[in-house]
Length: 103
Ligand code: SF4
Image 1 (cartoon, protein in one colour):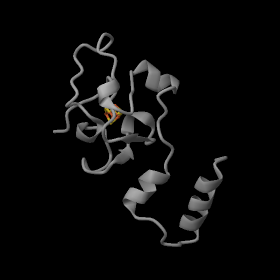
Image 2 (image 1 turned 90 degrees about the vertical axis):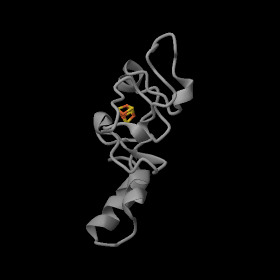
Image 3 (image 1 turned 60 degrees about the vertical axis):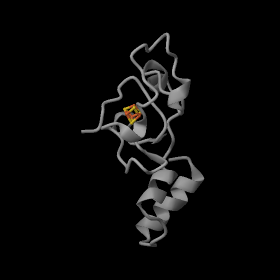
Image 4 (image 1 turned 135 degrees about the vertical axis):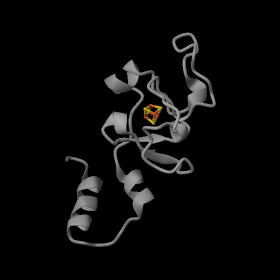
């Protein structure tokens, strides 16, 4: 845990300081980087319109993280944790090849 702001956040939580709501907690979590090896392997993009159509011909721009079963936030939240990426955050308008329609 080398991120100083994350450490400060955790210390506030441990101290019982009510500083953040649920969506703010998501905003404090580490974001998935498009260059992370797992993200590269899954073709993850922060913006679904930037997905490589040649590599992922079945991709549709209507498929976004906010509509994915693995997105751990409300579809209307701009950012939320993804269960596939160890709860790191992804933008609601993002996409990866493991996209599964929320039921
Ligand atoms: Fe987005 Fe779903 Fe892929 Fe996670 S698994 S990055 S929520 S499309």
